[in-house]
Image 1 (cartoon, rainbow, N blue to C red):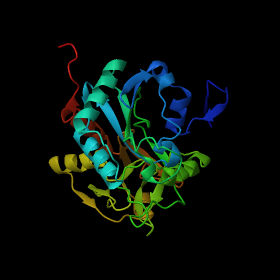
Image 2 (cartoon, helix red, strand yellow):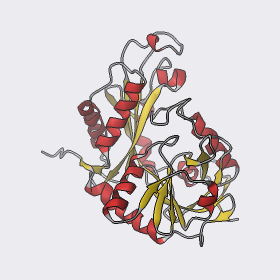
Image 3 (cartoon, helix red, strand yellow):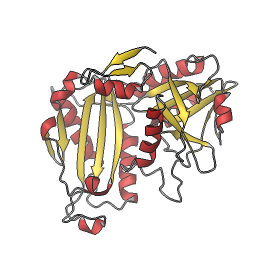
Length: 325
């Protein structure tokens, strides 16, 4: 097996090791000095901190969004802000900032970093600081804390494709924790990610409690069967905004699509399989549980949608303000 080397430890890393892990070992040097928005202030990375009493520290009690910047535009910004605010409402957050306030924080952070393209934003809204440690939201008496973390970051997966396994961890059911709440308590996904790391593959497919495909630990899933685009119902999976874009593009361009229950057998025998997400855009799955998908290469529908998606994300994105005016 070919290897690459971790520049920090000198340890050899398998070439097929998760691209996200390799990018962490070789960070963009520009990110060492980024400016971060934390609770109303833009501060250097080394000073970007929250209180030990903040709810995100006390119990992962926060909501988040991932945004991507394309050539001076932010893709699906309205949709991301609506989902964040809906998640905060469901969790009964107090003092949630308005869309205009969040927009201003995002734009100011990008401007402070000189970012207009090839950047990813991790937008986090915590329940805020507690007056004493504990789980109960009654201890939160100062309102929410907004964090805007913008980094120079290309898509985490290569367009060439990834390998996956099926996780033993089942995706949360709405009877326990609704995946439509885009919350920071990601242990369900992290446990699946650990299994993928142990298996030296890129990601893990998570099934729902009935054994149907839900999503991967960090992306939605699409299959192509006989020219028809298939994706799981958004019952246990996050109804992702990139997923939504792909369904809209398919309808616009005459690609038949359908939401349905999908088994791993259907995934193994699909003509094409790919994942969707803001962090990774569209990435073909080339192998699942040791089974090669079709001929083991990125298929024509996936290639076509990769191009259409990037065009769509830019064309429908919200322009950054002109700070020169």
